[in-house]
Length: 239
Length: 329
Image (cartoon, rainbow over all chains, first blue to last red; front, side, top):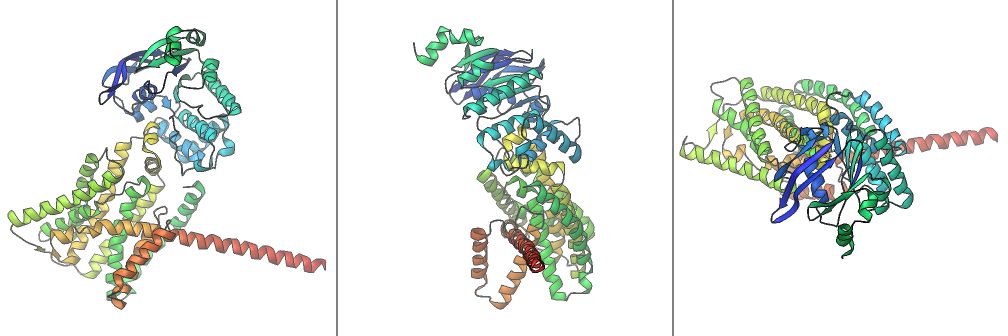
């Protein structure tokens, strides 16, 4: 088991954003997390990545309890994420963005500048980003920014990626490129857990889908099962 | 900040830093007594501004605690000047400032933006009031006399402290920690998620930068000679480094130093030549900088440099074309 949550709960004041949620992700899976706005999907990601603290419950990653770890400690274990609105270093180039992750995300390798440079170039070539290498993030398109955020997460030597709506706002060509990239990453052995509203992507590449509503999973299954599930239809379309 | 400009800055600095230190070392035998005093003031504020920029420059956390940290050094001297040599006072002042900055750092962990600014300003006021209260009710003194040191001694010590600050600032900018500081300033959430222990980097850098402020305070106390809380913890000492750093340009190592030197020389000139207009002209100058030159003096220097370079290339091409035309004709 790659990732497991038990009784995960978080409240903002009186609002229970994530309510006693159980979930698990197996190694090598692409799992989609869907649900209406305000269902608590992004809060769940924030809890997993350590950005906010759990009120109760536990989260374990590869058998290790990571509930009380800080974000930097969690990312050192190979669990990396992207953000709904990309959180990039806007005044830096694409290269510098990835280099920071490469240098700090691999504490055991103790990168020197030159080694890091080579590793960054290799990674950017893999992600198809070499043409944007020296562009400041400010001048990059949304799709390039989203792709850069994935490249930066990969630089952490990631074994699992949490992707928060990494396909929102992309045009059809960019969307299919992005789907191909994610499938390719999975084939390289990286486990993917993704929040997505683009149904075409969710249905096209996910092995399994978890439906979130009012802070907890209400349905789970293959894309076909979810598409025909009556509770899911009720939540999305009204009964 | 683009990689290429950083590399260029590194090359330039490797030449200019040793030259600066040598120039400062031989200055006392060249300049007059009053010029030496001006240079001491420049060194004092250059050290404070540069140390302030170490932390506040890349992280964009604007600290107004400089006066508190500088004041720690000043009061160390005021209390221990009679019993210890000045070199020991410098070390103790540095350690005292480090400890205070470490504590402030731990207290402000969760504060960002304007809340951090207000907190650091508040801490400085709190410390000033506490010392004032202590002096008037416990030690029963209003102010303290500090035995003076010669201008040459003060100058020498300030040169050593400034040179150390400069070298450390340079190394920091080109280090792994430097990369983390810039990342924190750009986007702290992202920095955390890329494996940077944000708390440790912030607190340690802030405390390390305070070492130079405390050391400078310990030396300068022997020049002030009369110390009271309002002098040691003067809020202007918090504000001026911010003004000087912005005036010079925070994005380059040399910005804060250039800003300090130019501002202090202008200030001295205005005070002696136009004593009544001094503050008005000084204010106008700062407004012009903030409105038209947000990158500071270094930006102006760089713009002129690139303009000259481009004009030079244009001229070379023009000459080449004329030559070709002339040959063909």
